[in-house]
Length: 633
Ligand code: C2E
Ligand code: CA
Ligand code: CA
Image 1 (cartoon, rainbow, N blue to C red):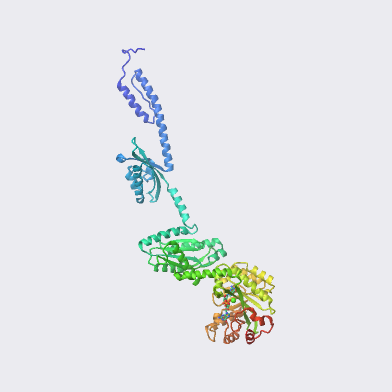
Image 2: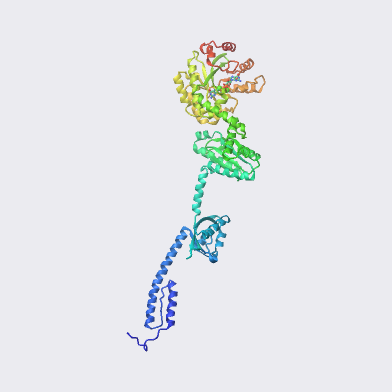
């Protein structure tokens, strides 16, 4: 078709330009407006049509891309991912929206720049961040780094940045893109796990692993500064019995309370650790030693220990002994230092409780000796190294032997004759008192059952045996198997038993008494000697400690005490035995005061039973102190 040039208007350039301008504006707008024209020229009309079609396509593309961007932003916001990009030439920098929030600039007041970003970081993390950035530029390799920013509330927020290089056509790095993600929660979970791995969950104190690690660092620091460090080791006396008597929850309460009290008495720079059941360690760095450690030890003994009320139950007394070792004087490494402090603790515990001691090389020797003694004692029962000696007890009124007290002896081929005052405590501490005590009971009862003369046999029983709970059954079984009449057996216990573990002790003593066995309170007058303990249990006898007989003479203080105890015995209808009678004078005084029974070297030293055949066989031939000495001669 040929267009008639005369009837068709010409296409104006301005019309085409106007259409193009409209298209460009409308394409990026979100509205529904369309491209229009005033021109009636068919070509221009067609052009408008094409423009509007393209406009629809472009708008759809813009909308989809906007949606994708929005979606991505949303994801970034939720995942707390921000990004930035630095074009190296001219340092032209852009930040994503989320980047602003990540660095605490929610209102977007900060002008994005690499320098601004580093300034927002915690000062300690800046150098590492910058180094990572420069390494990406120099090596063309990506780098990751963790950094902190302070948020508005002043708390640290952690984020992680992955820095990626962007290369130009020649393969040179022309830009660096950073993807940042907030990891505060992950970090704190990690910190929590780390804390748990290094702390005791019960008390929150450092555990052994953490103590070792920290102590190494403290020693390294002390070595640089040429300072000394003290390590104090201690555990709680009688903690095990708190667990046994009141249950583990009560034990846990005690440990938590200890941790709380310790926290009040150490300095912030001190490290407190719980390294075992009831074992604690305090590391005291940066103090004037040994003065600082001595004063801390005293505070621990005086202020941290003391009484504690168990939930709704009894009040218990906490006590301890403390071993101290110093760096660098006693040891150079953490392990050695802890071992030496422990050595000092071991030593002071054997010396007597509730005190502290600093390590001394002689403790090592004593420790080795004692370990050897413990080792040999453990084997002594099966090696048949124990024996019993018997000491006669005399009825003062009838002047007649009533029976014997069985006393344990250990004759060791290595250590010689070890006194019971020493080995019984050790036997208790190494856990063999149960079987050893049972052996004593069985041997003494077997022996007594053989005597023609049905004399009494007194057997000492350690608090440990009573605590272990099956003592009544053991006694019943031994009486049964030896055939000894129960009323011939007398069990001697000390008052400490009733003070430390009243309920269980009373139950066991009652069960034993119910068998028909008599129970005597030994060493009366020494420890607590309270009327309350005498009232708490119907004892059959009181044994006055021999220390009161030592300087017994008219008008002495001992005289007054013995008289008081005898009066008490009469009041409670309890026979009173006085131990340690060595002279005729003492015996005469005691008779006059009305002592019921007497025991001591004057009347017979502890000896193997075959030395007392005259007493054990001859009924009635045992009268009189003079006669007795004749028998024993
Ligand atoms: P204890 O039960 O008070 O025994 C009396 C101690 O005094 C015995 O010491 C005895 O030898 C000593 N003694 C007796 N008469 C005199 C005296 O006139 N003068 C002096 N100076 N001492 C006298 P031993 O045999 O060394 O026993 C010491 C402690 O060891 C006993 O004190 C008792 O607590 C404990 N013990 C001994 N055998 C056993 C046992 O089989 N089991 C338990 N659990 N403890 C025992
Ligand atoms: Ca005794
Ligand atoms: Ca005694």
